[in-house]
Image (tube, rainbow, N blue to C red; front, side, top):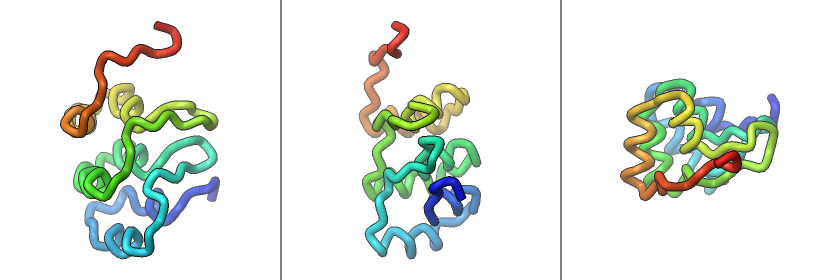
Length: 104
C-alpha cells in the first residue's frame, strides 16, 4: 500500500465520520506515505475540503516539508494544483506566503 494509512486511504470519501473514528485512536495526522504525501495532501488531490478542514482543526500541519520522494508540503501541493479552497484554508491557518522555494 505504499505506506498509506487509514486516513490517506479515506481521503476521497466525502464524509468525516470514518475519519473521526480513526482520529480517536490518536493516529499521526502528519504521517506520510512512501511518496511523501500526507492525508492533508490527499484531501487536496481528491478535492475533499471537508476532511481537510477537520484534519487541520485536529492538528494536521500543512507546512511540514516532507523529506521523501516528492519533498513538498501539503501547502505546496495546494498551490501547485492551483487549488483555491486549499490555499485559502491554509492561509487562514497562518501560511507564510513569503517563503521562497530552494530555487528562489
